[in-house]
Length: 199
Image (cartoon, rainbow, N blue to C red; front, side):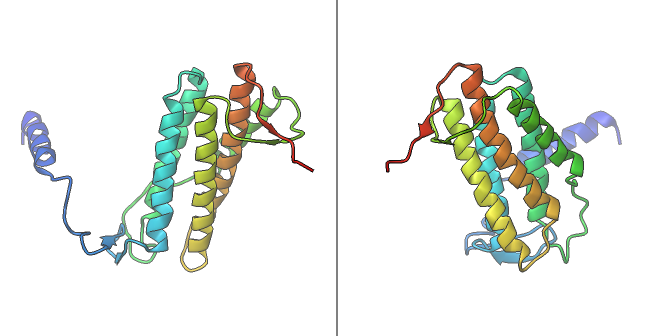
């Protein structure tokens, strides 16, 4: 088969694919591996929350306040979140499909970035209220969604297999997003929105 014909055939197949399948109209969907589960299943909730988080990371990445390095980090994080989503979307008992793996070095990268940013930041002496700029607020929203993804994934792990590295990565990522929000304040000379409790 000629290469040009192969390429044409692939584009034809993609063109013919419909975005809607109607297979989930009754509230049931498939995991990787073929297992059919309700759309409110905790496994669906877990990777759906990770997908929501990934969308917010994309929103952060689009903000002009971010440096080129920070934007590259956002892209790296989005890639890792797709890896996490694929793992959470797989039936651990049935899926034979090879999916990307999360590695310890992915967690170590977040820790390194957190440490590097913290070295430049003033000591944290107060709770911080979200706000300061769109980019900073988006970091806080993503941090909250990330915490929810971590909670849901922990809940899933009580009844089904979840790679331990997933919950650790999500934990570090929420910390990274908080520190990034502070770094953006620092870089752009925005006063942190400190919380002083009314006593």
